[in-house]
Image (tube, rainbow, N blue to C red; front, side, top):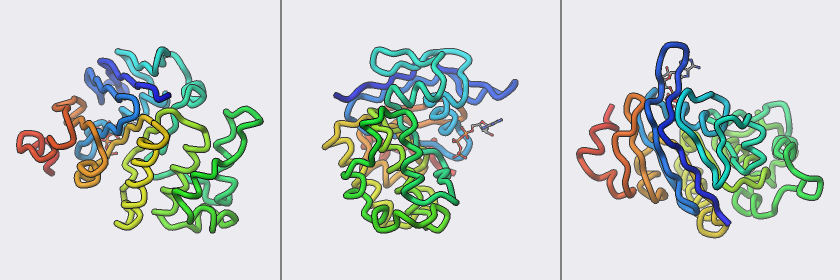
Length: 234
Ligand SMILES: Nc1ncnc2c1ncn2[C@@H]1O[C@H](COP(=O)(O)OP(=O)(O)OP(=O)(O)O)[C@@H](O)[C@H]1O
């Protein structure tokens, strides 16, 4: 069963600077929700609030019937929040296999394996199992970062700019993989992006952020509206 993730009126500060102002986002079960916005508007901060890396100063985040505000990151991972960070954060000196196995930490002994469907989604990971993470291209590292998050058996997958610096053919593979996870695994997906075409193609629901606030939310087709696009123009 897929689980809803609900972000309600959260504030987040870095010292005296307020990065998020009463942000509310509902990630409906089994749907892809995309948050769009220019550089520095608060997209990564929103995801780090969800994963527990950054603390919120107001509001609440709920995952199914669990409230997360006081839960440390490892508990959120155990509840089923999988995270693919910006810049991928692959361990460059570990092999692909070892990078995937870092996802075992929160799993019971019987679950400590790499589900076969991960290699079907990203065959390159299987063919490069014994290569070092640092030897992979950016796109291959992104596939590895998604694979590593999937090893944790997430119910919701949270991705920070999965298309950043990646070649078009691999962007297509990643888009297909996210649609498979939604359609065949019933996963709830939250991603932040600057690449509009990718979101138009794969997202169900969109939120548009500007300077720490949500300016618009609606279906992905709203990306074609002039009043929505004005918040995304550089
Ligand atoms: N660790 C930090 N300390 C202080 N300020 C920060 C920190 N991280 C982010 N900020 C500031 O908070 C604001 C939001 O940053 P955030 O990284 O969430 O934006 P973003 O939309 O993800 O941008 P990008 O696309 O560049 O990653 C920016 O003004 C940024 O400078």
